[in-house]
Amino acid sequence: MSEQWPDFKKELEKLSVPTDKLNSIIANTIDQNRSKKSKKKIIIYSLSAAVLGFGVFIGSASVSPAMAKIASAIPIIGTFFNESSDEGLRIAGQKGLTQIVDQSSKDNGITLTMNEIFYDGTRLTFGYTQESIFAIGDLERPTIEVNGKEINFSSGYSGEYITPQKYKGIMDIRPTEELPEEFDIKIRIDAVGLIPGKWEFQFPVKQSNEVKVVRLQEMKIIEEAEVEIASLKLGPAGTDLAVKVSKKENNTKLDPYALDFYIIDEEGNVLDKISGSGSGDTEKGEEKANLNFLYSPLKDGTKKIRVIPYNVPMSGRDFEEVTMNLDDQNTPFVIDQGDFGKVLITDINYQEDKIVIYFDMQTDAIVDNKASRNPIWLEDADGNNLSLKDKPFAERIKGNSFKQEFSLGVKKGIQIKTVKYPKPILYEEFVIDIP
Amino acid sequence: MADHKKVLRAKKGNHKAFQELMEEEKVRLYKIAFIYLKNEEDALEVFQETVYKAFISIKNLKEDRYFSTWLTRILINTAFDHLKRKKRIIPMDREVLERKTDQYVTDNNDSYLLDAIMELDEKYKTVLILRYYQDYTIKQIAEILDCPEGTVKTNIHRGVNQLREKVKEECVNE
Image (cartoon, rainbow over all chains, first blue to last red; front, side):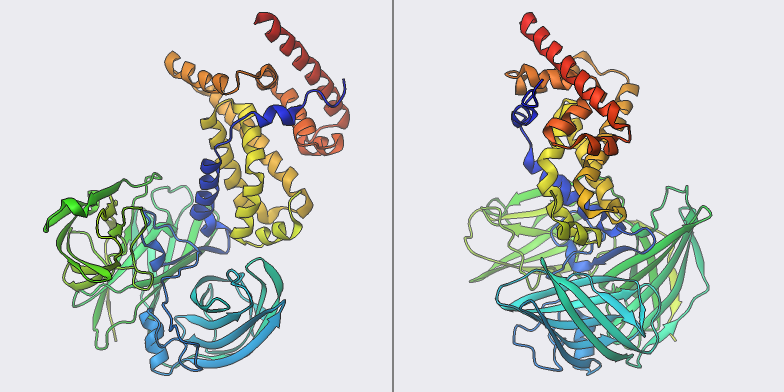
């Protein structure tokens, strides 16, 4: 028998291949599991803005172009974060709490410059610029040494091109262990996009001294798991919540990494969640997870906050999309978000190049300031999402009334869309007095 | 063969590199899965499970140059597990079953050989796919399947013979 027969390759060519399905399986598998890439190390990292327009809110390490709309001007030293849409960073930048580094490293035609950093114990954020002849992809996860010792961390990236050759980016680092108040940092980046190389930075970092730390000794039992707030750090640039979860390995009622928290002040303001990360380990049948969340800063003078644990039930299936054609609707009209509630569209204001939608959330679920858990969005007749890149979320006007701007091209055939979102399950809250 | 640097980056946790690698391998993997499972739905399920297993364990891959072989081994083991699970499941309604059978028969009814390959005993199917579709050497196949080279050779020989018999049968029946 010659090796020409059987000609498997020729035979297998006849099989039709559903390439689209395969591509989406690959993308979805990575998306849904990227956070679990290391069992012992980092489990999740999410930036709240990454949830825009998708029915899925699983933590992801993905780039969040919307998280920080940065100044479109060429960076001027010392003002890197001043225009950031991330409230905490903006405050830090404007109060002059950031540290100027201005160190460059060049390899393979790509120049990386570490412009400015911010560290206050709640967050460690690097503002950098990337210059090259062509637009190149994201930075690879760096190797970071603190006082000569490599640290474990989760990271999130965002940014934008100021010119096709210049990218202004923000890298948020969440170490798994607390860092000292002052340290020497060494950062090494091995690749930018697909281009390997070596870019190194070394400089001292000092914590800005304005962080208040609250440590609690209170534990709640949630779905048979022990949930404890390890610390709450209040800084000018953000509120850091550290939570410890411990459960029996065989308790399948709660996935510790799916647990989320609302922080609400005494006036009922819901803090914006900026990011979340987690790490954990299993020892002797006990799964222990450390979760860290970063929220917007508390308003000055806040005396008491509520921290409400919650969980969004996931069925593993895509949520049902709801679509209504704006041509057929007169305000007010209602769009259904399934278990989450209803959205009453109260007014639609067409302007020259934008549409402003005013709406009330009719739900007893907690809605954050950007309605980021249950967004609505517009699509034009060709199916293009009309959300604004630099303002991808709704804005709370008062109570449960919101408004959101969208871009406007052709007025005819615009569709308003949302998804039947599951309603979050709320658990017993922690009440914390702020000293 | 997969790009070494890309494999290295994927091992270090670069999701984009992993995605690119999987996109390069997807057609090959899907076709092998289809040969075992004989219908799109199950083949996609096995493919999905393979991508998942590869994703969570790529960091443990010892030799970068064995990426493709490693991936093939995951796929084949997953396909076997899937077949085992299916055997334990109570048979479906006749109607559903017929629909499923139609799906692949109509897709490929111009090829006796392809049908015959799918009907082979699994041990023969595996070695023939690895040898004639993947172009692996006898030594590589022995490593993937964790069995002696002699067994691989025997199974290839028997597989080809069984295949020839099946093709003959199909022609006669027709």
